[in-house]
Length: 218
Image (tube, rainbow, N blue to C red; front, side, top):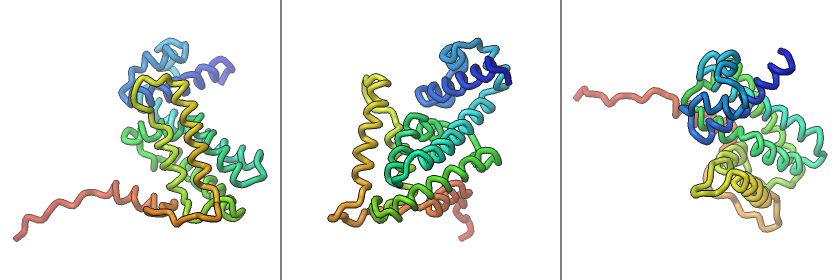
């Protein structure tokens, strides 16, 4: 891919991510092209239809998340600092905003998406294991606590709050969340279910299982 074509490709993926988060999966494609600073013809040359664009956006988000985890592991010797850096990186990438937005439009078990998703999950578990092993992460904090809280932090706030302020608040609230994850002498047992990666997979499988129709046999 030529440098200008690669640049347009990246601009379109970033614009599509943001527009889908703001306006949902039915967001107009011409708005995505406008924000990327390219023509709608350029968009269709890169992505033949909406489904192809959505797939590319989610794959890019997952790939960027993998790169973020690998980067924080290299850059931070302290495991809890690495976990904190990961949380803030994912907020910037908007991974936990765009994937829930497009969840019903894509099959995350499709080979490319599943491979990226699996690698991302494995690396995040390594972050958690290291933080637990260091003693800095309080007992009972599981994979689901990090992933689901990131989804909550990534959701738009109600009311006329500017996007820049919302983004800054998400990072502020992430710091408050992370402070609550640190081990303290008075740690109390966490209430609610401890959702590790296996438990999340079970929930996903249960949600996707066909609903059994009630029997009409007396």
